[in-house]
Image (cartoon, rainbow, N blue to C red):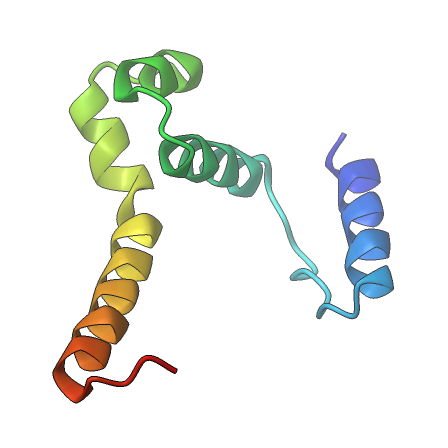
Length: 89
C-alpha cells in the first residue's frame, strides 16, 4: 500500500522541483504527517486522538505538535527581530 503512495508523491515532488522523499517510508511516517497536519489545521486534540486511537489527547499533543512548536518559535523569532530592528522588509 505504501509503494503506490510513495511513487505518486515522488512524481509530484519531481514535477515541482522538490527533493525526493527518503527511500524508506513506513506507515508511521504517514500517520505522523497526518496527525501533525491535522493539529496545524486546528483540529481539536480529542478528534486527532480518536483518529489515532490514543488513550489520551495529552499524548497526541505532546507527540504531534513538536514540529508546529519549532515552526512557531522560528516565526516568533523573526517577528521579534523585525520588531526590534524596525525592519518592515
